[in-house]
Length: 91
Image (cartoon, rainbow, N blue to C red; front, side, top):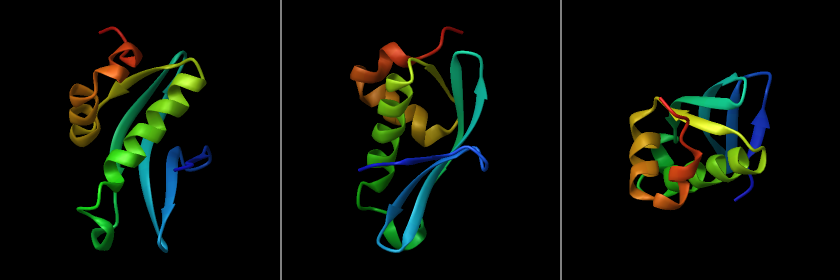
C-alpha cells in the first residue's frame, strides 16, 4: 500500500476506504522518530496498522534513514518483524 509523506504535517499517511491512517514523526539528521500511529476506529482490526507500519519502514529504508520508535504499537511491530531490526537507530 503506498503511503504519502506529508512533510507539512510531519506524518506519513495511508488512504484506506475513505479514511486516513497515519504515523506522526519527527525528523532528525539520519533518523526518523515515529511518535504516534492512528487508524480510524471504523477500520481497526483489519491489519491496517501493520500495513502502515511496514510501508513507513520501507520508506525509511528507501531514504537510507534509521528509525526511533516512540509509539508502542510501532515499536511492537518492529520487535515482531526482525527484517526491520537493521533500521533501529543506536541508543
